[in-house]
Length: 251
Image (tube, rainbow, N blue to C red):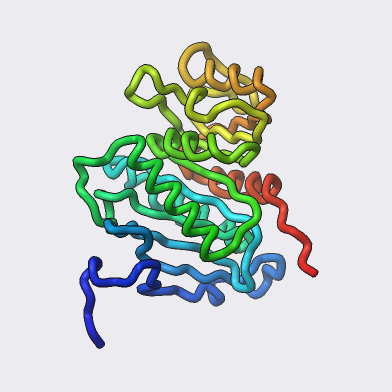
């Protein structure tokens, strides 16, 4: 066996896979067996990705935009759990590391919102190329929420889930500006927002939610439990995406 460095792997090569069939309980007949593929794609600096794919394929997908590296500890496992939960429900999920972070190539000094959004668009294009999905949604945590909003701007009507979003540092970029105009389904999980769909306070994210609703966004608020991805949030978000991305009937 020849051991390659990352730069020697051909574009799009799958460097490892985990067959998830044994992870599905025999008593859960409605859940699908899944496959997790770890790979590098795009270039010349390669992007590390992990794709959760239902065996038998899927017609809908979700791209997960992670937070910045120093925030990843609390979100990495929930992101993976969300990918597995969705794939067992028939939705393919593409996760990735931004260039200059994690296992991806690139210079960390080049980590900007635009660069992160470029990587997310590459991940979306890669997902479509590999799986041929008809409809897609986008999910993002913390700074990744701004990335998800920016990517979704070019996907009219696509469902977007934002976990603990915060405003970008640049004053001319607000989440409402990045996400564009509606209508679209939007799920927001954040501290300080009401539990039953109410906006619990004024200012910041609460003002964003009010603005989105004025634009006919279908906004669902989910209070976080502990940290993003705490008990119940992964399951709630997965079920929400499944409702928003119904699978096409197979002929």
